[in-house]
Amino acid sequence: MGTIFARLPGYDSSLPAIGTGSHIDSVPSGGGYDGTLGVITGLYALAQFEPGELKRNLELVVFRAEESSRFGFSCIGSKVLTGHIERSAWMKNTDDQGLTVFQALSAAGYAENKLASCELAPARYDAFIELHIEQGRRLENEGKILGIVEGIAAPTRFRVTVTGLADHSGATPMYQRHDH
Ligand SMILES: [Zn+2]
Image (cartoon, rainbow, N blue to C red; front, side, top):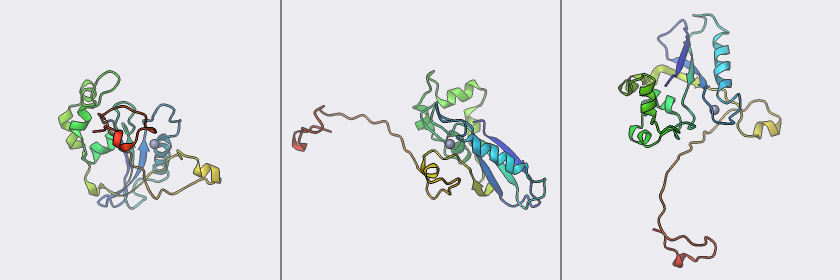
């Protein structure tokens, strides 16, 4: 998936690492800071210390294929790392050229059967810290420079086929509707 790792070793590398980073792909009109801010600041954090200065490993993870721009589903890079490859669902979506994510991987010289070996051990990280640019206007409107996330949106996409009888949505009483 092109995920990039950079590690600053701690003096006790047997401990789970502290992870940081974000994604480097974006969406059209996503702005110049989207995931890139978390990548650059993570790299900056690693550069503040000497190897062996911190107790734990500090690891920068640069995720790719996190947005749904190309294949219509998101978090491909992180799903592969966490062992959540959704093969049958991913096979149904194609990019503008008609390629599935697996065909695009193959064209780039990566074997699909190697994907499972990309899974990270759950104990690899003790914590993960991501700085992300605000994508709404709450902080900006309140004149605040930083916020701490307490909840994360979990968008889910469905492709549905609705069969029935087309009619006016306001003027047709329920008993005259023929939705199946
Ligand atoms: Zn983002």
